[in-house]
Length: 219
Ligand SMILES: *[C@@H]1O[C@H](CO)[C@@H](O)[C@H](O)[C@H]1NC(C)=O
Ligand SMILES: *[C@@H]1O[C@H](CO)[C@@H](O)[C@H](O)[C@H]1NC(C)=O
Ligand SMILES: *[C@@H]1O[C@H](CO)[C@@H](O)[C@H](O)[C@H]1NC(C)=O
Image (tube, rainbow, N blue to C red):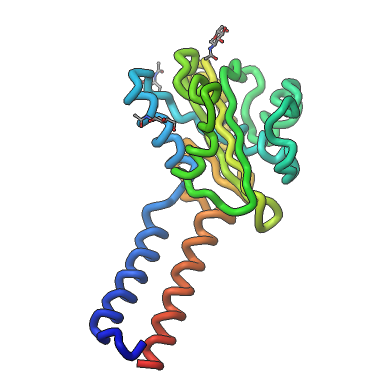
């Protein structure tokens, strides 16, 4: 501590504080960020830009919840039965069942610690098969979701693709999906106050402040 010039240390702390504060401002919804990464990668590969459908995003969050936090069930052939879309996922989201469209692709990943969107993208697109799903011309729309499990890990990310018409599929009664916290889903123009991003950035901010106070007292 003694060898670090004080102005330098102070500005480093200030930078840390500002970074934490702006992270809290701009990273409003990690699920929307993942959709941006997906569309950027698709369009760079001459595939179409996909509509971000909030009803489908909400269903992606329901899809995660069907795993009940069991990370080891992801992969292989274990997946929710197709009838869950009509029986549980759509009603839980307030999505009109008559507006459900075909699911043309699904990606799911999970790990004990929270992976931010860019890392989640790499986890989800881990092999040739998932890359084909990502670039498929069958899709017209997408919905993404992320959530932890009972206040901690494991953290799940899910992306569902569909070939429905963006304006008339997965439509939500009243225009707003039922809230399904904890967790975040894409397409709802909402800041996500789920346990993930806000928890992490708020803690970063708190620890930056504590660190700054500690620094102020020991300088
Ligand atoms: C798209 O994602 C794949 C899988 O991560 C990667 O190999 C490829 O380089 C990406 N394409 C672009 C244009 O970023
Ligand atoms: C696109 O849809 C066709 C017809 O359903 C199917 O055979 C094909 O495997 C799909 N492509 C991808 C990449 O999923
Ligand atoms: C779909 O919705 C968008 C945004 O609300 C609107 O601009 C567009 O005209 C709609 N398209 C159709 C075909 O209804």
